[in-house]
Length: 66
Image (cartoon, rainbow, N blue to C red; front, side):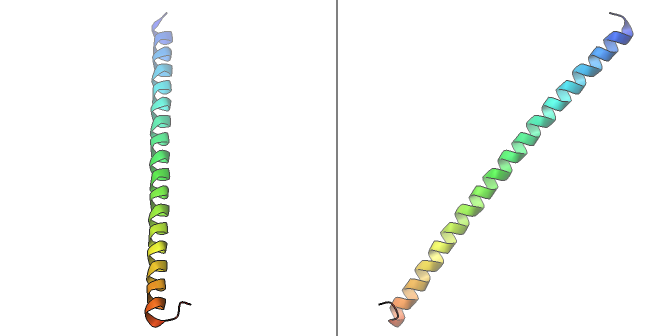
């Protein structure tokens, strides 16, 4: 292998490693975004349940629940 071929090989190796690293970083970011989305949805559901409970308690206090 001459110097030119070696340099080309090394460049190809570096490019492949950079692509693999970028792919891994994108996957981690995607996983983090999905986790955040699920957390927000869960929090929203908890808030909705609490609001519903408060509304029912107010109805009970006012005698509006039959």
